[in-house]
Each structure stands twice: as C-alpha cells, then as structure tokens.
Amino acid sequence: MNTKTLNEVSKFLSYVLRHEPQAIGLNLDSEGWADVESLIAGAAKDGRILDIGLIQAVVSSSDKKRFSISDDGLRIRAVQGHSSASVSLQHVKKEPPEFLYHGTATRFLESIRQQGLIAGSRHHVHLSQDITTAITVGQRYGKPVVLKIEALRMHLEGFEFFQAENGVWLTACVATRFLNHN
Ligand code: HQG
Image (cartoon, rainbow, N blue to C red):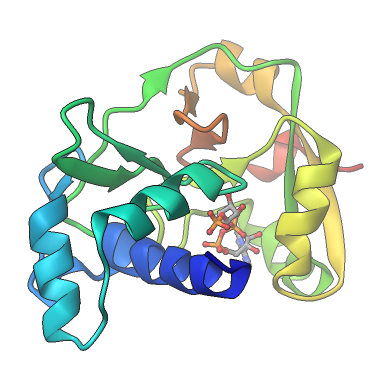
C-alpha cells in the first residue's frame, strides 16, 4: 500500500473520528468508538472505498498512533484530538513531568501572551514531552516556536493533566504565568 493512500485515508479517518462523524452518518459513543462496519458503509456512500485491510494498515502505520482498534476488531476510535461534542473521552489522569512543550506558530504568540494557551475547537490543549515533536506540530501553521510549560507546577496548583494512549499530553488550558519561550 503506498504512503500517499495511507496518508489520505488517515486524514479522512481523523476527520470523521475526531471532528465530523455525521458527514458520513456515523455515530461515535462517548468514548469515541465507531463500528468499523458502519465506518466502511458510511464511507462507501460518500464514494470512498475502504476495507478492513486498508483501515488496519492505516492504524498500524500511523506515525503518531492516532487510532486504535478494539480487541474484538469491531470498533475503531481516534485516541486524541477530538472536537466532536458527542465525545468525552476519559483520558488517564497523570502527574506530568516538570516541563512539557507546545509547538505553535510565531503569528499566534501575541494572542497566546494575552490569553494563554486555549483549546480552540479541540477538547484540550496538546503538549509533548519532547521539543522535536513540538517543532513539527508548530510548523503546521507557519514559522514554528516552542513554548515551555511548567507542567508540574501547574499540576501542584491543581490543574489536571491527562496522557492519551499515544503519549500526547492534554490539559484544559495553560495560563500565561506557566509559559516560557524555550
Ligand atoms: C494555537 C496534531 C492564538 C495553538 C498535533 C495551535 C497535535 C492559540 C492552534 C494535535 C492560542 C490550534 C493538536 C491563543 C492556542 N491564541 N492561538 N490563545 N492558544 N493557540 O491543530 O496543538 O497530526 O487545534 O498553539 O500533533 O497545533 O492531527 O492544535 O497552533 O498533537 O494527529 O492554536 O494535532 O496531531 O491548533 O495540534 P490545533 P495543535 P495530528
């Protein structure tokens, strides 16, 4: 299976499993799970031919382990990144390391300095444990800049942190007093 096809299907799965399941008449439960058969049927109505082999190939080749398939093989979900209101995934609460990183674009800095980091349309602000990942994330929106977050101090002050199945750190928002330029 070529990389272009895998990337394209991965983007489609991110779209329907994180943001717009109704675009193909799909239902997600509150933990984000969708029936694989319904996903294949919904995609087909949209003119997109998927099969279980292709879906499994996308799941197993995802560099960020974006998706997981249930043990019985019948259901699939995105492990983080949702904006869909019907989903409220119960991520594992965890004590963060001393620092976490957030990659963004320089053009957002002024607003971030005023408001802190906000989740926007997603359910959480996304943070990473390493600077390299943060740079890649920031590059998606322009000239990247990495912010260093005093995660442990936030945690000690009562802010909750979660870690998604794929290692991405999540929190509701980050106030400016916890933010530094790396
Ligand atoms: C910015 C990818 C102005 C924030 C990645 C970001 C991640 C503000 C953008 C995951 C702001 C939101 C999520 C404020 C935050 N003013 N801009 N107050 N607060 N922002 O895509 O974190 O490849 O929703 O810095 O790897 O970039 O899709 O979030 O630039 O884990 O699996 O608003 O998406 O994963 O952008 O990325 P996003 P994100 P996937």
